[in-house]
Length: 182
Image 1 (tube, rainbow, N blue to C red):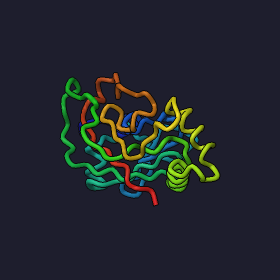
Image 2 (image 1 turned 180 degrees about the vertical axis):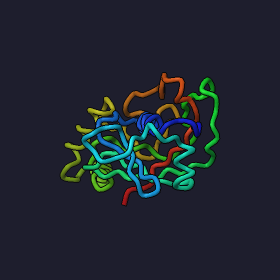
Image 3 (image 1 turned 90 degrees about the vertical axis):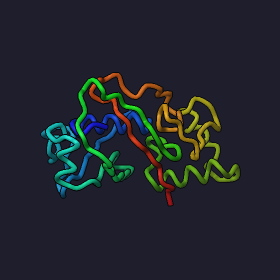
Image 4 (image 1 turned 45 degrees about the vertical axis):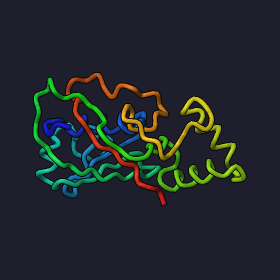
């Protein structure tokens, strides 16, 4: 993705790539400082005042992105190249990835581990409950495959998110990987 994107757009792109709905708070940690949505309610710097290139200049090529503080998703963003590109060439496309993104609101890394255990074991005490829950996201039972990755969504296709964005400033590639939880 282009280095001239503000971190607020980077956040939106990450949400779309993950197949999440952007319903929780988030923040970037850049050189020990938290940046997030502009608000008087939270003591964070405004993420829209810093571009991806500036973040790399301050923090180096690796920095943290947290999402859903209650579930505790911590992501490390590693920037391979932060060149700025003309706005007209910035089309977000997920160019590579590994494994499906965990479903939003599954309880963070611990809850995701429990979800995976329950889905693969029909005798698990929460198997039917979590199978029903996952079907509310995916649209049918037994369609969530944690090993499946789809470039069209980056998320295993659960959310029906086929177009990453219509915003012209968010059109460039991203690699995504969901590490094993445990």
